[in-house]
Length: 402
Length: 221
Image (cartoon, rainbow over all chains, first blue to last red; front, top):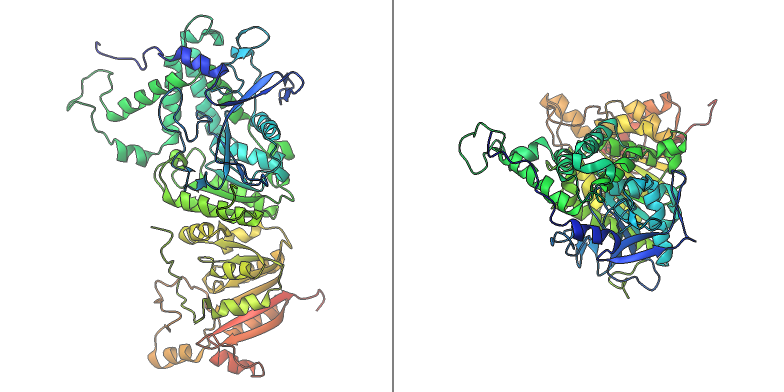
């Protein structure tokens, strides 16, 4: 059994990644000991910091601000070159001049979530009390904790009400938490490819990913930084498993089929004979270059704990009773991670609360990740929804960024 | 399919007055300004746009995904849903008016749908093609085949309209389930209202469609 490559060589970006966790290549809002972040686990986190990016200009009436909430493995670098990978921002297709989230009209804010590894306080950050990396000493955070931190950032920026909160997947969970926790601060909400609670199947996939990380000997009980290692193999496997859930059978088949990778015949080994294997290995190894393993544990855990109804006597509609926020819920037909049925349950609850809600299911075979891809129908819907929200809020066409 | 393309209406091609369908204008006229309206089977949102332009808070349910997405892309508050199965999810008295425009005949359980309309809304506005229209009768009597008209061009085997009724049938149903008819209008083939003082049998013969403003009858009546 020769020539069999295991996934991922050692991380070349370890130092840059560690630097980014404390000194991000973006704006930073630092909160001192007098402004702790109240966490659901009962701990007051202080001091802490939030790394964020903004695009466009806040208008004089401070009424054109849109908050983007990012998904599990994304970050605040929505529409600029990523400082670690050198690749374009993850949502440039959606955010920019003339795009649906038009930076000529709107003031766009995106912050790295608490527990993340791109500059907001998280397990990869330095614990100010010890001068060492937090690791597993960092308190477990939840989706409500992330949103609470974002609300503190909004206070810091002097913005009372957001024109819209937008996000897909874990970002969509944050959108829903925003509307449940701060309904008066959210004029409209665009939750996409998400759910009001994480399903058993999704928790199961996350547990698979976490176990892969923790089974890697380089994990060292979470203290890998002290050992000068990073569990890149475990994290890559976690990413590979996760990545499969973001796609669909049809999309994988269309993209790869059973085609071989740079060969015509099987090698009768466990090398990556198939293109799909090679693709997944690439996804795994490129991910570990930019992401911290412990952060992956924390963020998947936050998603697992998410259940809005549970915080409202088990009745989802109670979370939204009397809400004035305008909603546009979007799901994708081939998304089996957050299937349309979950969005429909949300819509029923919103209807029962007499909320103003639109719901569109978009036909695509591209799976959960469709919200990040070139799906024109999604752009049309997002653009029109924001325009109608802007109109209702009294934003003047074209003159918003004055 | 691009959602900018025209959405074909299922089996109904109504007359128009200016930019709007004539039956829509009549419906819009029945709705008080400032009220909250649910349009069940809202198609591509034409009626909702008309209502919103008149300062009415409109919401919609539409069965077809293309229809919903076209509505949402117009900035309307529309959700994908089925009149037969999804009305039960709405709470009592959630709307001032619930509108069912040219859709009743396509539902599986028209009676249950009608009852739900008046549970969700204080008033309901229902419009439907009148199968008692003289041209329908003539085609069946003389031609011996299921009627097809300009407004109902589908053949019997591919029509979504599975529960046709006449104006007379509908009035009987309203009486049976204790629904009060506040206003009833029959429109001719060109979408013009027939004169008010004509007898029911005349409406049933010469009305191409019926438009009814309904409310709950007071208990005990």
